[in-house]
Image (tube, rainbow, N blue to C red; front, top):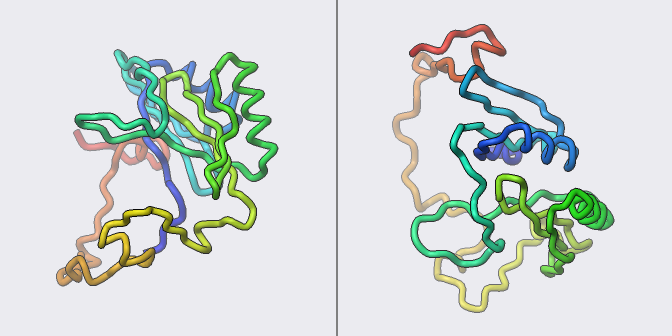
Amino acid sequence: MGFNGVNHLAMATGDMDKTIRFWRDLLGMRLVAGLGEPGYRHYFFEISKDDLIAFFEWSGVKPVKEKEHGRPVTGPFIFDHVSFGVDAEDELWTLKDKLEAAGFPVSDVINHGFIHSIYAYDPNGIPIEFSHNVPGMDIRNVPQMRDSAPSKITLEGSIPNKRIWPNVTNPTADTEKVVYPGAGSELFQGKKLKK
């Protein structure tokens, strides 16, 4: 299995125009796709050559209450924050200045040992981080486990344990591999979505 990044993160907004102003115009992420019809919009912004962030616009969606990145919560919960990598340390300072000039509060630059980061929120209240890898500390090349009390499963290491899950015994036959039209196929390929 070869993963090539985050194809897209799917978020929601009640105000696509404010979202475009922030992600495209302030942060500089190109708006590369827009699906829509009255009452529905789904727009994609380019993070990198392999990664996108997307927003559904749903009426009635309100910005979330800001929660400090990484602060524990209780009850059902599925998302804390998203971190975007930048190519150079100076870009953190450029982003910090740009966000502050636009009226968005942003943290100081924080040293996490292997990355330096700043923290902010988009107009929807989505917690965002921008990170730069500390030179010589690439955890992708040399994984680091600094947990003082790791679980037994953690101690198995960074390499996937392929013996945990069952092997596929009944793979999908080539004759059964059918790709069905979904939202967007009618716009990009002329294929009508069955309702």
